[in-house]
Image (cartoon, rainbow, N blue to C red; front, top):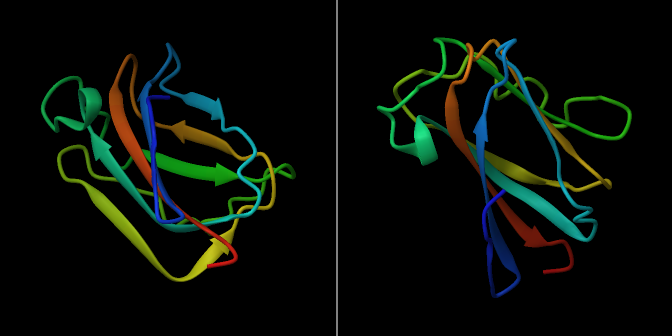
Length: 123
């Protein structure tokens, strides 16, 4: 995970990833309880450049809670190998605790960037 920025109660959380030998990736985020997810953007390629080591077509991203339930409800499934995909939430999702990002079907040693926008829940 790379650095994040906090402004006026909002936080941008960029996660650069690279899939393993089975085409998967998993990362446990720190506990951001007290925040809500406003949007999630998936961007293929090294650091989101959309050209270098892009994942396979229709790779999948889930954000699991501690019970392995995808809190995004499969909204991040079937991502493009060449175009960014932004999921804007009309109702922000409260962060229930520790979350795990799981990427599958990306291909071996493929890369991308996930950008999670959070806001403080009490705003």
